Amino acid sequence: MAAAKFMLTDFPWDERHHILNTDDILTPALVLYPDIVTANITSTLNLLAGNPDRWRAHVKTAKLNYTLRMLLDRGVVNFKCATSLELLQACENGAKDVLLAYPVMAANARRIQQIRDRFPQVRVSVLVENDDQVRQWRGSSIGVFLDINPGMNRTGINQTRTSKVFDTARAVLDARLEFRGLHYYDGQYGAVAEPERTSQTHAGYDQLMNLVGGLETREIRVPEVVTAGTPTLPCSVAYQRFQNASFIHRVSPGTVVYNDATSLTQLAALGYAPAALVLTRVVSHPHPGIVTCDAGHKAVSADAGVPTCVVAGHPELTPLSPSEEHLPLAVKEGSNAPNEGGVLYLLPRHVCPTVNNFDAALIVRNGAIESVEEVSARGDKGPLLAGPVGTAAIGGVARTRL
Image 1 (cartoon, rainbow, N blue to C red):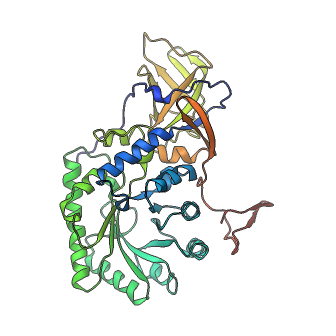
Image 2 (tube, rainbow, N blue to C red):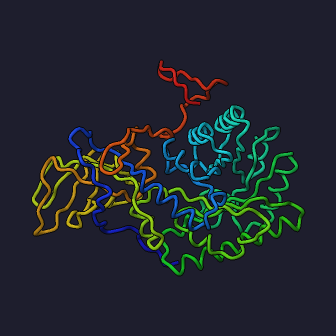
Image 3 (cartoon, helix red, strand yellow):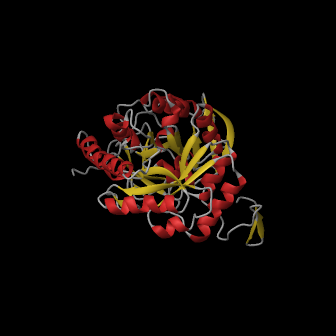
């Protein structure tokens, strides 16, 4: 497998990102551009032949009720999430069908059941990969997907362990649970160049289809197959055997609603644009050829490595290794350094955890700040399982999020 570092090295200035008056903005600040979010949603739906039912959008990126409602307004009602708080936000805002695509056990599983009980009209599903996880849902109305490991080796039953897949599916049915289908996240191909990315993913989908066939031979119907985060979205859509299959095939990208310096490289030909930037100010000139801004890794996530971002419209500035609150930038020799107090717009390398770093986002349209919106699914639950009404006392402060 030919690995490559997928990330933009520079990004030209787009006038749609300009904020007319930044004097009263406290930096670093997360900025969302709803017109671009709308365009990105449209680009994704166009890839799906205009059918929103094929998109099980992952809300780990969207994070805001504001953005979730934009998806719902376009007919996207099937979602995927990674935390109980994301599940709660999706249910509260009108989602019809939500898959918690993260293995949960013990108190975490009971939290999911609490949410399901509060929203009986929402079809809630979970992942399982073994008999212990199946047993904990016995007697519930939670739907169950088998988590298939396509070689990413993060969770799931390895796709080569066919007997284990068949036995676990049978255990779901024996437990009188609703078997919803197969979940298959092939995120390991994000740093593989085309055409090898498509070749590798399609080889994996061939094995996935063999699993479907084996289950059906054993009279176990597979209602749905979920594949593809952002990197393999076009590969999954192009796989012929998913078309007119016996099951509903859905893709589950999340990053595409905002995009980042990684996804814009992976999906360069699909018309996506960055809808989330971090506004920052230059705070220091500590050394010749270096300036520092106030967007360290507590603002722009460093989980994907260094550089953590691209400075939009400034190819002469190269982000260096950040500290908690500071981001030094190397200034290309012969270029003018930005003045202290000057604002810069950063395109994150990984937008999902970057959004999670902020309590609120500025909504900017046509250069003007339209509103301030809470990052409503930031973080997760409190450390104690809440009671039935969803109130827990933490550190003497009552919290009402379930």
